[in-house]
Image (cartoon, rainbow, N blue to C red; front, side):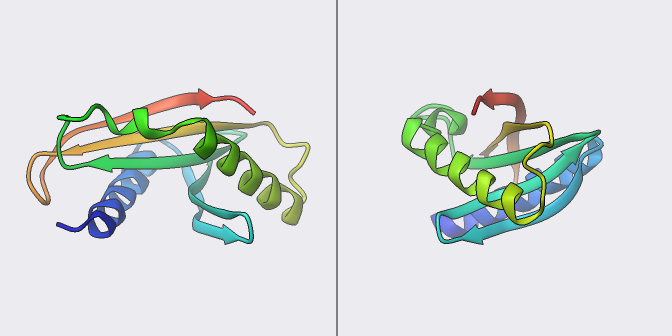
Length: 120
């Protein structure tokens, strides 16, 4: 499976996982000039920006380990744009990460939600 297909499948699974855990999905693949955020959701009253990372195995580490400082800065900029556009600058928010590891092309070995994966 190509990386884009793996990523898209991981995002679909993450959205279902989040919904099953009480999140309300507001947007998927939100894009602006600064970039993209995979999922924007509400967890109770908290606005959550979710980065989804997928890998076909754990040979080179867990998917969430790939969210480096550059990626975190990028996500923060896009989140700020979303909040400004929607009048949500005063809303409590956080950044979560969903890590998906596959066994085969469509079989999940592990899916993990990391709340407060990083701070703004």
